[in-house]
Length: 196
Picture (spheres, rainbow, N blue to C red):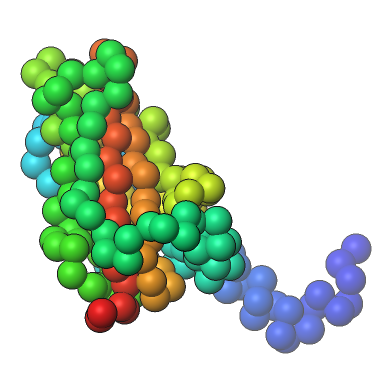
């Protein structure tokens, strides 16, 4: 027996809308799987494709995380951010690297911002996208799951659009591994909304 309250016009409209949404989601998923998108093996070096459709702004770093990082940051740290550092970790190949395409300079950027990375891999190696990690600041707060929901991560690299980051200086530690056990790490330093 159906509850009479669920038969009201407003509930019936909601139920119809949810049913329609579920059908649309199932159709989109079927089309995605049918195109082979779920199993593509893109080349290792070109830039990753940007997400399709308008990107939704999302909070990559919360104001509370930024305050916490600022509180524990060394007091003698220079106000200007030095050059970005790239390195391969032990066991890594010197040609395996994470290259930052955007933001393009150490100049101040405005939020929401775009982050675009390319993975440069050694010949014969393939990046394992599931190993990609993003850590924030001195405390190394893991932002990986938050970023994954709003980005495109592939063997070629990462594209993040509309990342909201509080004004200030921020450090992101990026890491990825390939199928040969090589690990690349990149420190991305951001100056957001700060002009001096």
